[in-house]
Amino acid sequence: MRQILAAFALLSAFWTLSPSAVEEDSLKGTFLVATSQMRDPRFERTVILIIDDSEDGTMGLIVNKPADRIDLRTVFHRLQNPPDPGDAEATIYFGGPVELAMPFILHSTDRTLDSSRTIIPGVALSVDPELLKQIMRGEGPEDVLFIFGYSGWSTGQLAGEIAEGAWYTVEASRTQIFAVDPEKTWEKIMETHTIRM
Image 1 (cartoon, rainbow, N blue to C red):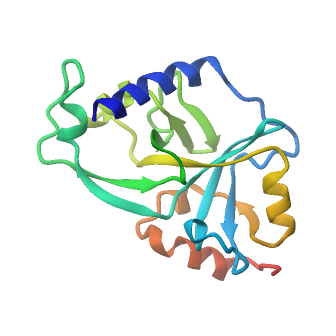
Image 2 (spheres, rainbow, N blue to C red):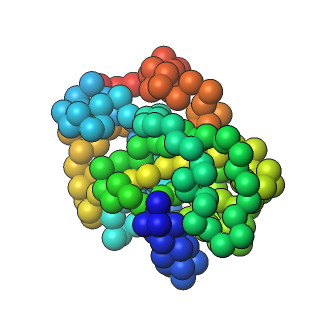
Image 3 (tube, rainbow, N blue to C red):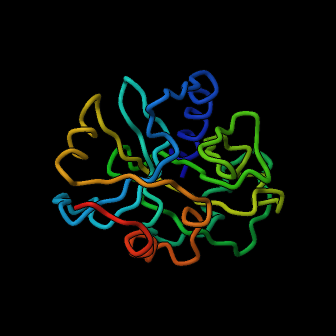
């Protein structure tokens, strides 16, 4: 788990120094939803929250693919002056096939840090290890997703996939991001939106 904490520290420094401007036609803050035309099994029936979209490319986190349960003691015991997590467990989400050891915390905005980035109203993203400590002290946000890995596209790549019918976009919502039953999020979006296949 030392690599996980090191990754949090490294990402925190990068995130603080590299804010991204939102372009007028940016997909940031929308859901990218896989259609029946999706041929890549890694993205089948996925719902991806776009967290960055610029001329340099697009980055998103899958929010409906819980991967495993972990004992939080294995994460926190290497922190300096760690809080006692007791028997707490957390669900780890598969955020995408890129950099699978890279950690992200998607959380509600009732508690934020200066380094947190708001993605949509009520939802922010953090890579700051201090937020981990707050969560374990019982001082963290109400809603939290621990996500490892991300989904990424080079300039123009995602637009091409959308044009081919592999994806469509809909407005993202906090309720669907922090769904009680995330494995049904894709189906619920399909049922509530008119999809042009």
